[in-house]
Image (cartoon, rainbow over all chains, first blue to last red; front, side, top):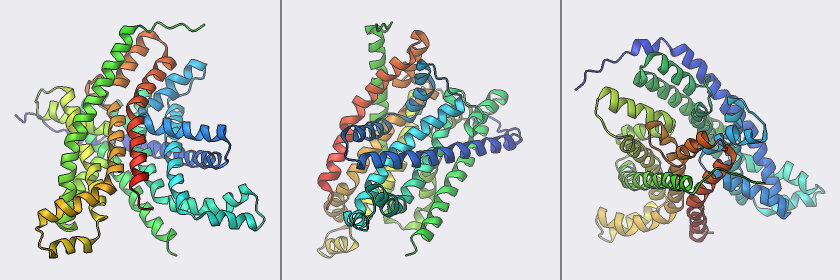
Length: 221
Length: 217
């Protein structure tokens, strides 16, 4: 039954290339997180603006991001937008797709966080002479970001896992893409993907543990 | 003005893909939930040290991309064990375990939300462990866990888009096949998105409603 010989040596010899891929994966995830948080803050402001059309933008964005697969969103960024004559490179498509997804989920996290902040906070800011936007910027937002810190690390883990979808739009420099290419070269499917799995596991563990350590520091008071 | 080569047959083809998506999701969610409840109860009841191997294994399912889990399992079953089974079964197996890992986490959260004192009160009334679990913990934990469980079911539905790597033609893969043939990516993707939306939106709303209705504040 077991006449399969494992060839770990062959796969391990490719480890340096896979680690390079892992760095690209982390880069994409980090970039998409930073952009995603910025967009999510914007969407939250739109949601709080009280104007119906602006709120509709947020609602649509959040519902589409949360109710369709991430893979679909990446396809949309790559093949869908191409219909308008905008051709994104694989790197850009994956970045746009994941950022869109992150922004949707983070906006929802922020909504939850805002519930935990008393209304009086914003109003206190207003009565100190701040404008609506200033009260949000200086009083509410820092608390919101702090409360949603752990959900954000979760989203970061998701972003890392989602980068593996880039391969579907021709991305071949991230960890999954590199593994796929090496697999086509060597046919050591099991060994290569097992190593990739271990690398992914280590990355995500580092993020969750790191997140908890930072959280412990952030929430000292 | 607007012209498309999409025929009724193609729509039926997409609907079949959606059917596969729903089928894979339903099977995985059912098996995954049963396993998840078992794992979750074990994890909370035998203490963190004894449960650590289980915790570790379940953690892997949550920290490795599903795409890799699928490719790896497929390679393991096909190349290492050399068993010939259809991609559909591999997809269901992997997705079930994937679901169970998340479900165990939800179940654990639900059980932890039941105050220790409530359970001790039940035991001191003479209930057995099983009775305590069935009449005290189950109803209270379900309240906490059900909204997240609906979220999980939706998540699995969306993640099932990845099973194309083990040669299962589900909704997104069907769309891609049509895109290759008709060359109308945007239009087809919008239809595909609409399908996903129709499947998940009612469930998402139910989840939101339950969350609102059942939250204590």
